[in-house]
View 1 (cartoon, rainbow, N blue to C red):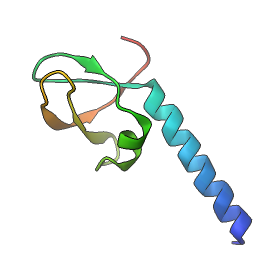
View 2 (cartoon, helix red, strand yellow):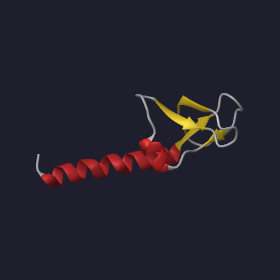
View 3 (cartoon, one colour):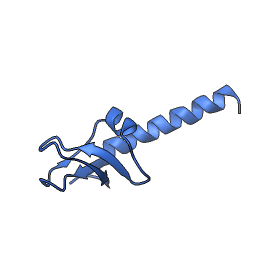
Amino acid sequence: MDQYTVIIIVAAVIIFSVVKSLTSRFTCPNCGTSFKVNPISYIFAPHSFNKRLVKCPNCGHKEMLASKFGKE
């Protein structure tokens, strides 16, 4: 792979992550608040295949949660 291919792949991953962060919502199991996470927190949060470690802005509860797409 040449350097341009690597740059294109990295740019595509970043764009995908930002778009996904802007369209994903999380629901706190503690207080029921539905919230979004900013793109930087979304990208760098510890995560598994379908869950991310997020913190509820309302009650401060931290947990690995699956995201939901769209508006709620």
